[in-house]
Each structure stands twice: as C-alpha cells, then as structure tokens.
Image 1 (cartoon, protein in one colour):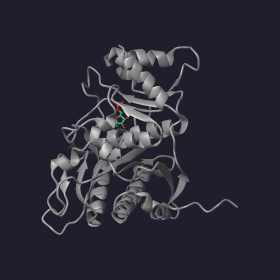
Image 2 (cartoon, rainbow, N blue to C red):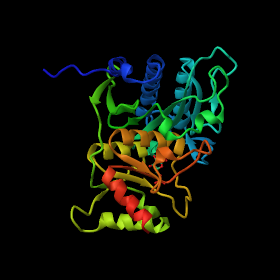
Image 3 (spheres, rainbow, N blue to C red):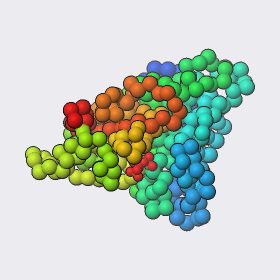
Image 4 (spheres, rainbow, N blue to C red):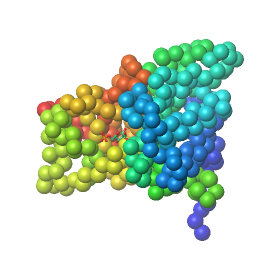
Length: 334
Ligand code: P6P
C-alpha cells in the first residue's frame, strides 16, 4: 500500500516553520496562487472547446498579440491575489505598469509583492502545446502602509523569497521554492487537489539535451554558435539531443528532470534576448539554483543583475550546472 501522498496544503503547513520570515502570509500567498492555478487550468484544458482561444485583439507592452487566455489568466491571478488581501503590489507581463494594491489604506500591512508571467508560451495555446505561469515573490523594501513604488519591483533576483511555475501539460503541476529546495505538486483534476509528486527536485549536474531556437542561429553571437556546434559534434557523449518546445516552463521542467540546458541568447534580432528578467528569468533562476542548477546571461549570474526597468529583457541560459558552465566557457572565450 503506497504511503498517502501529502497535499500541497499539508506541505505548506508542515514546512512554513522553515521559512525565515512571517510564515502565515507567505503560506496564504502560495495558497492563493494554488487557487488561481486551478481556475486557469480549467480554462486552459478546455481552450479548444470554447471561443476563448485566438487573439484577444489587443497587444501587450511587449508588442505581442494578447491571446484571450493570456488576458483571462492575467485577470484571474490579479483578482485572486487582490481579493485575498495578501500582497501590496503586482507586476505582470500583461500590464504596462505595476499595480498598487490597497495603496490608500495606511492600515495595509501587506509586505509581499508578486511579479508574474500569467501565461508563458501563449503562442502554443492554439496548437494544444503546453504553456505555463511563472511567479516571483519579494518582500517590499519601501515602508509598510505606504503605496508600493517601482523600487519595490526592481530588486535583484537574489532577494526573492519564493518563486515557481505552473505547467499546464499532460498533467498540471505547481513547482516552487521558498529557498529550501524545489518541490513539485501534481493536480488530481477529479478532486482539485495538488499532491506532492516530485519532492526535492534537482537538476542532474550534466545532461544531453540542449534547448534553443536554432532558427536564430545565424543571428547568434559567435560564442553561442560555437557552443551549439559543440553540442552537435560527434565526440564523447555527444551529439546531444535538441529539444525546444517554445514554452520556457515546459523546456525548463523537462531539463530539470532529465538534465539539459535552455538558452535564449541575445542576437542581432534581439539585442538583449527575448526573456524578461523580472518575471521569467529571475524566478526560473531561483528555481534552477535551488535545484543544484545554474542560470546566467553567459557572463553574469542572473540573480545578481540589478534591474533597471519593469519589462527589461536579458540573455538567458539555465539548467544543468556543467552544461551552463560549458556554454559560458564558449561565450566568454569567443
Ligand atoms: P521563440 C514564449 O513566448 C517564450 O517567452 C518562452 O516561453 C519560449 O521559450 C520563447 O519565448 C520562445 O520564443 O522566439 O523561440 O519562439
């Protein structure tokens, strides 16, 4: 008889003492993300059945066509986080500016801010390929009870208190860290409960999978080209396998389980890369490092980069430590 699997709710309660700050609020925050994840999951899973897919007709600050599910997911996460009165500020890929929550209430003692990519990989929605939500949580740095400012959001990734993702794949999972390792929880849709299915997730120190959009090869810096050719060379345990889903959360999740590297380098088309530092790279970097992996822009540790803008982009490499270090070697010696 297999041991009863712990639910996400039980796990949060059991582990909140290991969290170095006031634990109750963070637990409530993770719980509100869990609720929003279930609501969004329900819509993602039936996207093909109702007229909710397809462009919403608007574009976001990134200039990308907003998919209706992008808009829906953004609204649900913001509503849930606001309604539960847990956070004092939210920034989202789908919002031009950050949102101050209850900023007129000087009794608002909420100390956490959340940055979110509500539906990453949304171009995959219409073709039934997995997508994800990414979240990053900080404590505010401006005085409690005052409206949050941009300073609260432009913190280094090393200041994150929690980060994670939801992957809406063949099964729906929440994978997150509060700085004490990475744990994965799988949703049982029949009863709407997440169960601890992947305790203490770790990147294998090495791997054989490289994930990059090779369609951009001719536009990459020479060091990146040299690393890709290294991956393809018949030597030792190479050539590696190329796997690129076009959904960061899905590529990251597979590489964390099997071993591998994900790269979105800068190029002559994207001078700073495509991925956003605050709500894509920093949370994935926190997870990567907590899972014994590594994340950099090829030269600098992602979580050491001081943000200057809310929607700032950076080049991004993350995954198995040895693979990231080999790619950095090629990039730094080109
Ligand atoms: P490209 C999705 O838009 C995303 O932000 C990541 O999830 C994904 O890895 C990447 O962009 C795909 O971008 O340019 O290769 O299609």
